Figure 1 (cartoon, rainbow, N blue to C red):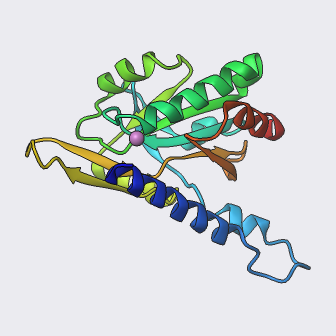
Figure 2 (cartoon, rainbow, N blue to C red; figure 1 turned 90 degrees about the vertical axis):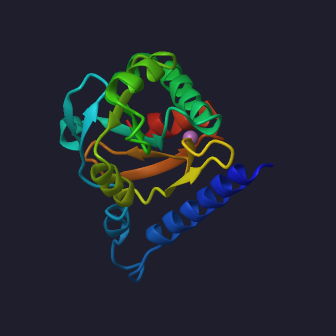
Length: 198
Ligand code: NI
């Protein structure tokens, strides 16, 4: 297990822990605290798509969103996550028309709209790729509690990788958090999670 993988796994566990903490009822069982917990993951964003259009989360109200953060140079984790998403959508068939799968780049300097378009085309035509300014990406990552960090390549000073959490967020028709999976989840389970939320 290389260092990067360990970091990703630790970060994923930490992310899961944070999510679990965020969703724990903070108030006595008599009151409904679910709404408070849901509101703590996710939030508004306005970013640029692989087709060079400005896109807002509000464009997808009334549909489910799958939100996954990563970057196109990612050696193995992101491809695995995108394959899980893609296979789950294929399994759902036409029911997936009500689901918007979104890949948000954590490497906006290298992931231009054109780069995203080329990369995502090899996974699934349904995928919406989003990038933006470093500030816009930082804001949306913070809203989703997605950790990421640029790591310089020791051998090639001009190159770097990006350590990041690998959580697939399922957001409801109203844009609030419903549940999550990861690149290590089975696509059947993700498809079931999505079907339950449709
Ligand atoms: Ni990745």
